Amino acid sequence: MNFKLFFNPFERFSEAGLAVSGLSVILFSILLFWISGQTNDGIYHVSYQSGIPLVQAVIEALLYTLLPSFLLIVIGKIVNPKTRLVDILTATIFHRIPMTIGMLLMQLPFLKNVTNAIIKAVQTNTLQQLSLTTLWVSTIVSLVMLALFIYSIILLVNGFKTASHAKRPWHYILFALAIICSELIYRLGVYPLISERFT
Image 1 (tube, helix red, strand yellow):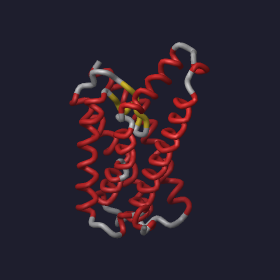
Image 2: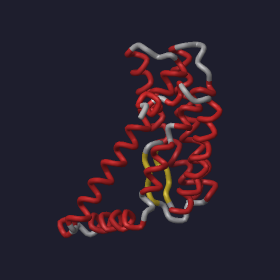
Image 3: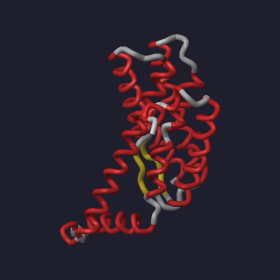
């Protein structure tokens, strides 16, 4: 396996191909979240919300894509004035693919049963009664989801690096600040407004 290509497809594939792949996955994730009753209450956080309207899922997808893209293009222009919005947007869209795969895995019936069992145990304060199998499955799933999240961030870092030619440590510090700010802005400011509008 070409690990460089796996972690940085932006250097090999065309921006059009990457953008189409990413957009296709985002459209799929909108339907997935709508059908499964899940909401993005953070750019990198998901919660269950039964009866979520399709329009809310669409708005969330647009905002969790555009908000970090806006902040990253600002940082990209600081790093390199020739940074293009289309390259940043492509990276932001494409890096959602691993997380969407993770959410799809969570729809498997036996994983949903494990999740429901843990939620029920937390609510009733009976965690000690969970079976060893449930705990092992939960641990493995958590590790897989963490790996997919880390892979998503690696894709975004490499996409930003390719788009802006970032090289110096302070470039990546600004990148990290942009991601943290986008999460805080979305979770503390944007999402409450969306949630209030549709509840």
